Image (cartoon, rainbow, N blue to C red; front, side, top):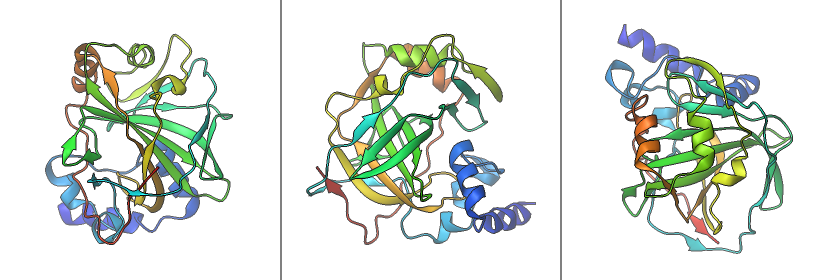
Length: 246
């Protein structure tokens, strides 16, 4: 059975561009898990053979002349909130985008991992939000927003948590959601080439992890962890990649 699963996952790593977009939007779309027989060590295809995989441990960044990210996010009414069996994901309506180093990427969705998948100097944060974008030429870019447990609640998270299904399925937020409210004021970032962090682990993704971290209350963190106690992929080798900082 395990051998069959590995063969299927390996075959799906060669999916066409249209299916890759679906994977980016739906956070996978195949049978895999974080524990047991379908845990990350058993993921196939690029998840095992790729040389530019995410997430990574960010030790520091080479100072570079990177432009600030230009966020242009709109408020979303009745945003679709999905429990896809691996995370809570908010599918965002068209019209919101970010300009990263002169290139426009449209926001598709954002979702959460606990603990954070990325580590800073070997330490993972309590949670991360991954904001997934796609340019007109098909290139994917992700903005990572790190959260650490603190006394302050994030109102936007309350809106999302209030509509998130506890089992696989779809829900909706009762209040309008503006993903811009998740961003810290200090928007300096680390930039590197990477991959999707879930199967098919497609490479060629431009990663931008914000250096400043936000707060999440213990109650908010516990509410997510009650559904997904751990949904973070292990750290991957940096290999020959360069991490830049602005």
